[in-house]
Amino acid sequence: MFWSVTLSLLDGLWTSFEIFIFTLLFSLPLGLVLSFGVMSRWGLLRGLIQTLVWIIRGTPLMLQLIIIFYGPGLWLGHNIWNGSESGRITATVVAFSINYACYFSVIFRGGIEGVPVGQREAGEVLGMTKSQIFFKVTLLQMIKRVVPPMSNEVMTLVKDTSLARIIAAYELTFAGYSFMKSQGITWPLFYTGVFYLAFVGILTLLFNYIERRLDYFR
Image (cartoon, rainbow, N blue to C red; front, side, top):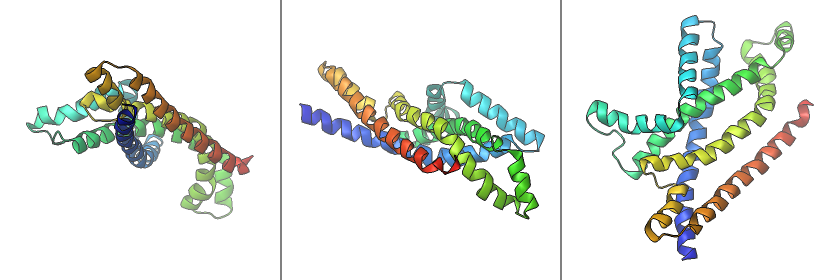
């Protein structure tokens, strides 16, 4: 029994890991783009993105996931996600990427605006282009500033992958819950928590390492 539960949880863990990796892959660059939009000089663009961020941050991720997965089928007459396991994972990644991109955009904006204006002005005096100033002055210091709040969001993402079970994606929590539902045993749920703790523990060590590597800005 223990071995079969372990194999099932490892299968669910792999799905959770896929959701986690692909969400970061898409949400991080999208969040940076949104942060630029929020800081844009174009009032209309800035207002639209601020409204989007406000809506996404102000509504539950679970609700967004349900709308993205079931909405197209109701509006278009057919389910664009095909109802398969891969389709459910894809819908989850789309919903998660949009949600976390909005949160990351706020973190990125704070990191960029936290860099003293005088340093950018000094770069201009030295004849650096705007792109050189961003990549060689602003970006490096922004990374240092955003790592702590970013690490918190990334660890939250690990636990939020459990929301995928709402649309019947076979992720880690779904795997643990299935044993309670089919066999009436609860210990697999506690065992599931061990996998989450190990996942978050590895990320904690990783971010601690990254923060130590960024100590050159002290």
